[in-house]
Image 1 (cartoon, rainbow, N blue to C red):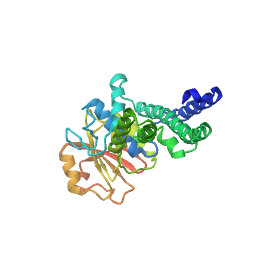
Image 2: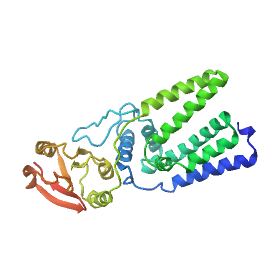
Image 3: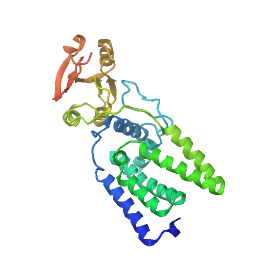
Image 4: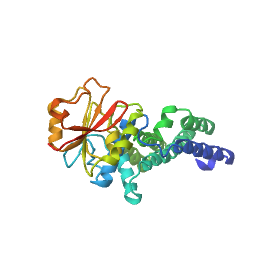
Length: 297
């Protein structure tokens, strides 16, 4: 298909892909306390645990595991997180790897989409479709620079379309096998998560609390279901959502080694249970989040 494109149009396609990449890569160093931070932190901690604990894509682990040594979680096939971990084995783990990978996946997806539209319709339609995909879809612009597996799913979807198109035209086995592999990987990689909005108190608490933590200290969060702070603090611990815990749950976490308790004061259940109150010392407070040091039981 590339041989049928005039040089000026090739240049147009090149610049669309280049500027699309740059638009997404400009926020490469944005911390995970971003919009939809729950999902980004969830994906990032799975990737970090692949890299640091068990390098096996069939055994994803999360940090909200309490005092357990392993944090295995039931989810989709975390191929994106595993690719991030694979790169991290060479250069070390950095959140920017996930963002950069998705920026690159945009270029791959854009090229595949352009080829599919050019074969299905014509070159002009393909250019318009590529431009719309690169700059006309706000949600896609966000997802392509976030630490989320959706850009990989989009890329696999385009591979499915292009390979199905190639198989219909030529009945070739390579196209059929590509379709089977891409579609099966796509289905297994789909996972479902809740989405949370940006909260400025979270990065503030992380910066204030992290220097005070002891090595490998466990942290429990009360009325706070997002794993972003666990990831930022680089700790294992507990996440108790609002209305999903009791005083006995907190006492059990304390007995199992929780040394720090973070409470969401804005929740209706924000007060400390009586069994823990006298063993808690204030460590940090930012907005509606308060952190306490717990004495050893």
